[in-house]
Image 1 (cartoon, one colour):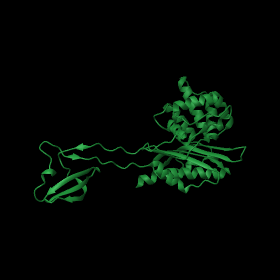
Image 2 (image 1 turned 60 degrees about the vertical axis):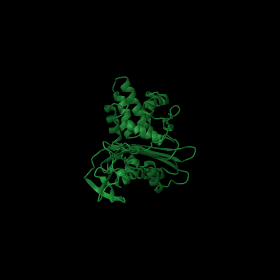
Image 3 (image 1 turned 135 degrees about the vertical axis):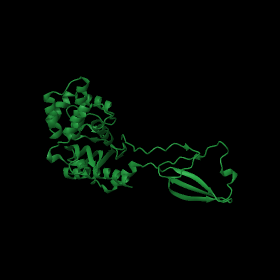
Image 4 (image 1 turned 90 degrees about the horizontal axis):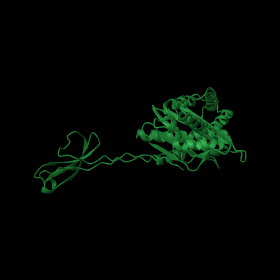
Length: 322
């Protein structure tokens, strides 16, 4: 799948100086020469590692730089955090029922770091309705026009109430799968394919792609203009009461914006259960996409994506507290 890898911090560049830092938080003795020169490794308040010496006798010639030569301070590389590994560890507490499968992706909006767990593609079910509206808004921007009153009516019921008839109408308006796929190419989705004919709910996608879509909806670096993003975000924050489950389980109270999808497959009787959105926890915003299939009941699928969403956010929160 198109995985969102976590980004580690880059090493700080080498700084050369001929002046020893005096403001240090701690010092560790690392050696004493035969001539009595004590070498100390110090850590400045900004975290840089320095090497200094205090001589109780004469310093060894090799310990002092020659005239005009500057002392060299080696770089200290801050250890990178493997976010995918942390997420995988957090997901050990999430146990899908036999035959069920789950994938989750999360992004910390403040740091820009992300992680993903699970492979493969999933049916979108109704979460594709966010993609449909994003495509409609992009096409309207390209035509330098606003949505019509009828399009707005469809958009409202499609997102807030997950109305299927409205989704079918807007699916036709964007050119069905061809229109969706063209917009997704611009959005940066690489593992999503629109459903055949009128079957928009059978669009196939990945958790990583849904995270990319959420960045288009909630991020500033987006193909969608500010007005389009605000409009779509607003609808996702007014989901009907009975549909306020999924990623919202990881949020503080009502601080969320989401869209859920649920679909019983006729051939198997098993459920596709998905949830995507933004949640706020302890003042931090996270984008989360949790996808699942093979669930024996809708309720079990909902419990699975909620547990995955909570584990995903916890993986980032726990790492930040260490």
